[in-house]
Structures are given as C-alpha cells and as structure tokens.
Amino acid sequence: MTLGVAISVKSCLGVTPISSIPYTMTVVTGMDLGIATMLFSVAVVLLQIVMLRKDYKVINLLQIPIGVVFGLFMTACGKLMTFFPDPSDMVLKFMIMLFSTVLVALGVFLYVPTGFIPLAPEGFLVAASKLTKIKFGTVKVICDVAMVIVSLITCLIAIHSPGSVGIGTVAAALLVGTEVKMLTKWLGKKRDSFIGIGQKTK
Image (cartoon, rainbow, N blue to C red):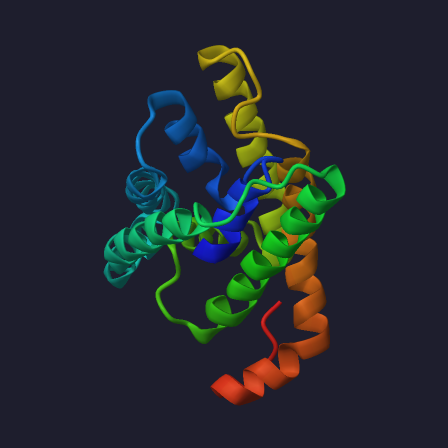
C-alpha cells in the first residue's frame, strides 16, 4: 500500500485518498509524508474511540505502532521514487495513477478480512461500516470522497491551490473502493479459503 501511495505521488496527478489528508499536511507544513501519516493515524484512532465508545477494543490501540511502521515504509518508498524521473506525458501519468489505485485496493482486499489489526484509516472504515450497517466497499468510497473534499478545501485555504488534490485523486476516490468490490467478487472465496475464515468479507 505504501508503494501504491508513493507511486500516486509520482504520477503528479494527486495522491490516493487514503493519504490525501497526510499529504495535505506535507504540502501545507513541509513535514515528511511518513511523519504526517503517523500523526494522522493517531488522530484517526482517537476518532474511533469516540465513535465506538464502550465497544472499542483496547487491542486496536495497536493501530498506532502499526501506523508508525506504515509511516516509515511511506518514507522509504518515497525515497525509492526519487530514483525514477517524473513522468511528463499525461497518458503515462494517468496510467501510473491507475496502477497505484490497484496496489492500494489489493492491499485493502488482502489484509482487512484477515482480522489482523488494520491501519488506522481502514480501522475507521470498519468502525463506520459497523455503525452504519453499510458494506465496507461502499463505506470506503464515501469516506474517500469525503477525505478528498477536506484536503481540497484545506489546500485552497492554506496555499490557494489544489495542492495534494488532482484529477488522479478524484479518480482514485471512486476507483479504489470499486476495485476492492471487484477483487472481492472475483477472488474473495479463494482469499477466504486461503486465510481460513470460511466466508467472503463484504
């Protein structure tokens, strides 16, 4: 997933929604994207606690150290991308952006159903899905669009430009959740059989 986010940054069309707010923090303040991701993870964990209250499981506090590891990988993948030239052709940029959404969707598809402690943003989606009784894939599309809107408004106010948000961000906001649904439909049973949960996660 961190590689997918780093590639979305490289596309120069805007980052994927999962990192739109952390990247907005980077654009506005100049802090490293990995550090911004760590701070965002802590904030989202606190939000989960407020949402779920007594139903919140203490073990989910492990989302914080996992968020730290994710942030470190984000920084590493970002440095890896510096070895590649920035794409100049719009078609190539769009293809790179599309590839990044597939990587992010694949990551969500593989690890969320395992029951392993999720990343804080995905943990928030699971909590929101539980509270609203709406399918996870649908909740992801809604939340992705909401994060893009928040990022866009913040950038317009703070730096008077779209900043971290671009056509690629908008496309990814709609594509990642849809791709998760498609992967679940096509490969969900095989995935569930492999990890031994016995039923398809919706």
